Image (cartoon, rainbow, N blue to C red; front, side, top):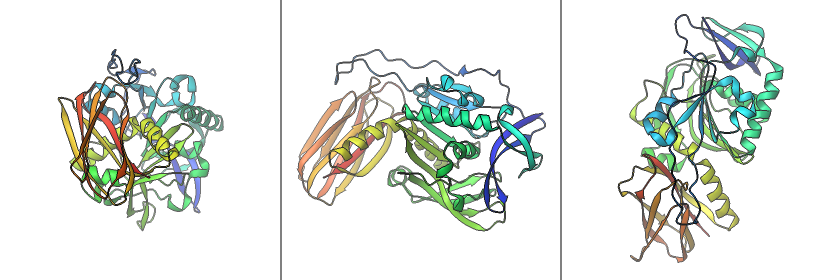
Length: 399
């Protein structure tokens, strides 16, 4: 029984050689019918947007790729998050055809095996037992690149995990950082949280991550405007020396976003690791909102000083936080969320005790023209949300 994995061969005199890898598993093959399958019905909301007077937006159309064998159980995580995260299972081979992915907003390229149609010629033994490396089918490279770039240009979001780093390498060959491309050995490592928002959610500066198999891929990427969320020092697979590289990154492309994560959903995940994965999903589903809000703030002359990514389950659930302003002047709090039928309230209490509240059914803001230095207490209440784990962003910017 044969399944296939697309990988990068870094063992040829330091050159970064892209290769297809065929993996042989004796009794482990995921059944597929070769067609897209809806795992559950989409949530639909038919109410009026009280802010704009128009109808609410449809939930994001999410697709999760699969082939013979999938190592990333992101579908299971989406199932656990609830009805707002309904998705379609999409054969991985379909990503080379924009007509099959153009209907989606969010595409998870899950770590797993690869289509036979992508294989070129055998080029040597792979990095694991019973693995054979193959060159690319050059025609497929062109199709994948054209399809995914068009998907991103229209504003789609791609989340690629682990072995699907190889797909990003053919779509963005100029972004691959050869100096940090060192596949990792099986190990548990202490990752450094490089993003303040993620650190705030996890309540830590470090995060222990368990990689239970050799040949996992670091986020060896250098892209314009790239943001690093996690990075770490680890033992390389080839020679067991200690190396350092990003492990979770995001960068813009066209109107869309690309996220790559070395770590993904598996059975052994700890509680903190699950918090990380949930944050990753919330980052993906709110990427368009983040882009719109940040772009608007920057164009208005504001500089973002704090970003929080959170979620609420409804029932007037409230999330409270504090922002310490060290600069007098204009201060803006932006509550960003999709117009999917939610009613959210933002309340901000200034250092002098004055409180300002505002409700809305889509992204809105509270601005202080003459903000003073000091502590600003703020809270977000979800009076009505269309589904559990409804995500939102809170952006704070000054001028």
